[in-house]
Amino acid sequence: MAITKIPAAGFTGNNFRNIIINGDMSIAQRGTSTASITSSGYHTIDRWQTSIGSMGTWTQSQSTDVPTGQGFAKSLKMDCTTANGSPSSGNSLTLATNFEGQNLQYLKKGTSSAESTTLSFWVKSNKTGTYIAELMDNDNSNRHINKSYTISSADTWEKKTITFAGDTTGALGNDNGNSFTINFWLGGGSNYTSGTLQTSWGSLVQANRAVGQVNLADSTSNEWYVTGVQLEAGTTASDFEFLPVDINEQRCFRYFY
Image (cartoon, rainbow, N blue to C red):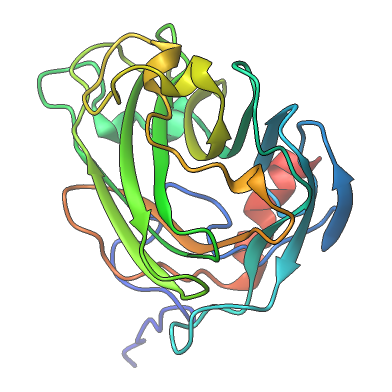
């Protein structure tokens, strides 16, 4: 009798192509809402770290506001509750997720065959304008590459796709160290915005990290939502890779505990 293997619900070919864990914001073991956030840490959604350098006060929550008809049930929401309309030079606000080098060896970073990567995500905010997404190599003196995207329509879900070139300099450690980071910039003082945006891989220059970035902290009316975050090898974005909840949760358990 022939046995037909049936794939688990939600799986497609080339499983685990999404480098990001919990990109659909579905797992929130620490809680679904945290108010009065003024310091860095993991506050709600698993695998997503908020970094705040004296840039307003925030409520972060797992929201049910999602793009219609895309299969998402949750998003991460940042809500400004105390504004900072005139940030000092060293102020900053980012949302980040980190990766182990042993999971990224197939990107061939630091070789002549280094793979490009494509970041795709859904985003929504009342604050239109330019935002910055950054890849950072923590193993090689924080080499970085930064690209801008634009929120064009207020209070409207928009899908964004950004392709980053491969980096032929600096291999990632083949271990469980924090080798690689994605930063979503939400605000920054002149220390981070006064240079020229680093749109190709290069040595860390703080002033080149968030050039053009809007200040999401400039009003208590400001909110920012994100979901469906995917980072994959190659120069095109595929449909979001939905994993079964139990598998997504198990992957988050490793870092939570």
